[in-house]
Image (cartoon, rainbow, N blue to C red; front, side, top):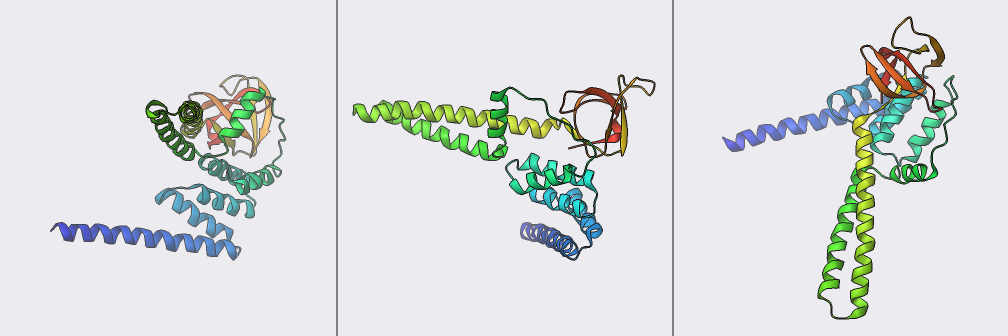
Length: 249
């Protein structure tokens, strides 16, 4: 009975893999043949039913870009970068898609150490930083034992200073991994999907009109109140807009 149950589970698992492979092949075939709408449908079905990945969001973003649906392309490129922030192809295509949007918003300069940390953190994904942290911790333990049990002064110095160095690396990698994971889980940013949005000074239709933004613009969600979201632009402007006008990255 156990063998029969195991066989059934294996067959079901294999059928899912085959279906996923066929759907992916169809999406890729439609993309290469120029049928971008069909490719989008297939890629979206995969994201909804079979899981997501950085490469899948990248391919979906490319399909939307080719179909001239730039807000959707930007959304999926941004989602791809959340999972793999080091992907240069995604970064390049994201910049191309952003050139097609109406709003060209300048970014407020941040403290240089903060900018440096974010650049280093985004060099790898959360999992990769975690792997390096674990490896560094193991090396730290080995060097610690070398320092404790070795009788040679030179070897003890290597064990001590090397252990301190790898402990610092371990802590730094853990901080980067946690920061990446926190960014992935919080998802504070969103993309505007309405052609033109008037941002208000308060969460109400009667609120004072502050400024106007257009589809494809990236915003940071600061607060949510009912059907309204308080957003912040990269240039520091803050206001309220209907939550239905934006889609979370």
